[in-house]
Length: 161
Image (cartoon, rainbow, N blue to C red; front, top):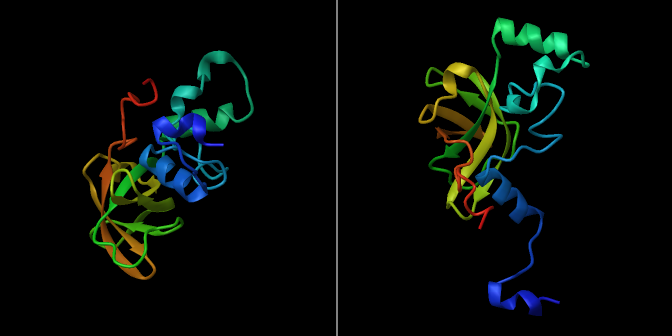
């Protein structure tokens, strides 16, 4: 079954491997990262919304959100000093004063990057690359740093290889 790909190192892959890879690419998944709770602009997917194309369901709400300011930004985080567990999702994200400023929607270990990762939503003031945050994993608070979107291969060179 794998003979044809043996020269390329083909092997089996499961859901946990796919989850690890998607976190490293900041790929959003419907049901955990993309829900009815967040708009495409909050999810960093505004490039797929054509506000000028005419009427569509939700257009008025999106216009109001853009006028008032988008309340959340989607980020990818490196989680530092993890001991026993990586984030899984739905963990609170804090600023350094202990105020909740967002929540993780998914997390796990990025095997290619060799880092514990989380993705989720924060208040826009905390979305800049390099911003330090705190994430609570199983009751333990860990340092976290906002990474560039798609920390593995941000220019998609591997996808075009």
